Image (cartoon, rainbow, N blue to C red; front, side):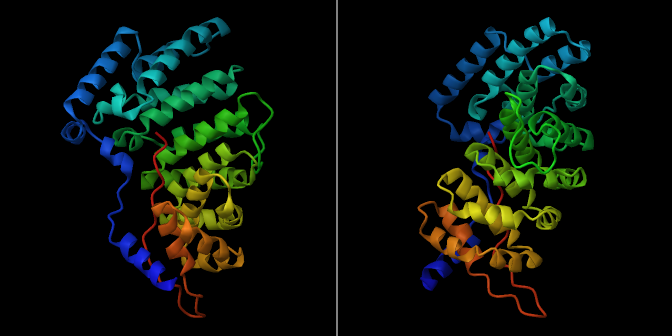
Length: 336
């Protein structure tokens, strides 16, 4: 009912725009919230990681810098070290890298690594490198150190190895690891684009034209990864403008009824954020999104329901004034 929708709007507008993953940001807050037994368990896990020889991010990057033209046998030495770093840091609550939230990792060395990847025949290394970037991009100090070279390099890997060089493709290429490369590259951009400046870099280097068509893929996991990245991008005004011009509404609207909760929740997040752009409101209506948004008012997820409520109640735009904005955009969830 209309009263229910209004209540939902009142509830969502009074809620601070915090991200659940921010509870992991910094060790001081984590120590206050984590029971002693959990802290002891986490310390034990970190110790085991070190005893098992899990390298730091900088150690992996340094190895790559010392082997600018690695041979196949050398890559077979590198991959286990990359895997050890990933396994030791995959869980943010026990990640040695994430615990050192104020320590910047070697992002310059990362650029050299990523510039090399498109020319390696071993695509496993590309997947592992993207996973490592996704992990270190959880840290604000690293995201702020990202520059155009990093964004360009990630997009280059995505296009060359994930899409067989075909910008505008709706599906990954034929390489065995193409799907994994697209998913990991999108997850990297989701985390990186938590910073406004990085959204600008993503737009400048043509990221919207690369990712938007992938929303039409039949691969649910891939679509969820891409939608998450785009939700992060359209949290910023410049991102919304670029995505509107790239036709994101026509790609995202059919996904509002997707059977996958992950796809559905991230797609409604995209539409919700885009509804903060007055010029996108008519496009949302023309895409026949409103019936789907109304159906999502019954979704058991408060986040999905809240996003749908605000977007569904947007009044028809008048001829002379843009639609009022009911709610600030929602951030996408970190891809942890």
